[in-house]
Image 1: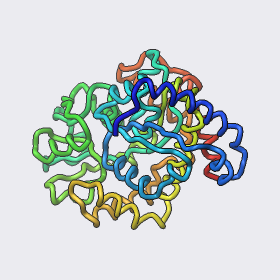
Image 2: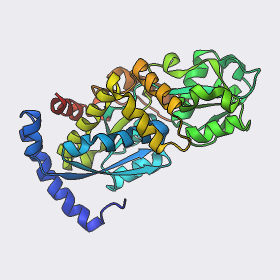
Image 3: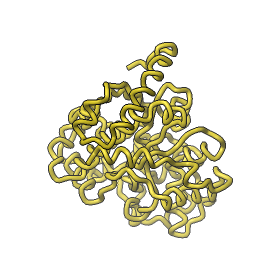
Image 4: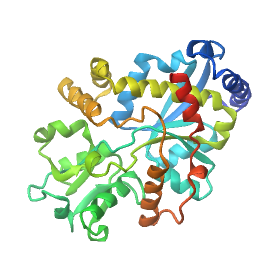
Length: 344
């Protein structure tokens, strides 16, 4: 979908501010009453693409939580974090719901007027895959070529964290900037790189693709403190569209709660089959079970100060961030707390 023109967007933002004020005034009302008092509002949501993201977005479309909360979403996907932040800072998009927060923290330290407003996937849903039979552990990766993203990007910092945990100097490996996690997995399966970090949508199909996961490769277990994704918005959008952003967050909180419940299996599987390039009901069911066991979605929306500090310290150690920025300067969790009042 196309975003509104610049002229129509100004008018839209003026009206949005008024609607947001109405929501704040009515936020103490019971759930149904509060929504009835607020007119429908368009919200432009931008995300980076990944199987978990597009599956959850399809599930959201089917369950209509955004619609129930008076939000008309316009979903945009971009290929990297820099374009994502550019879309937010330009006003083209209002909020990002799913993207790695490491690069956002770096941008904020450098002066970008952004705030992290919620958690989304609070642990990695990734594993380390390899096609090399002799590579069985993280230690075996020393001297190897590893599929990654750009320096300081999500995949790169995840690599640094796991390598350091098992005593491998990251200067003794070669990082190949392949791109997205799906691109990395294709490079691993083709033997272009020795190992790569990718999502769990292929975890149960290792034999099919001729790969295996290294012994310490389950990153949700190995790096539980590594926050995979969060939600963030520009300071301008928070000021002008606060009410709509709060309702958007509330809709996702409702979805995360549903996804974390035993009742969600059939709908999750159907959603993934609808968006997957290689639909496999058994694989989708395995992923649903993974989400049930690991509970990696932030059902309460809050991203803790400890998690934000960990990611900043990792950025600093990699050299993409110079100083630790106070939690209050990089986050605004008041929107998440207001959203949870609407969830009930």
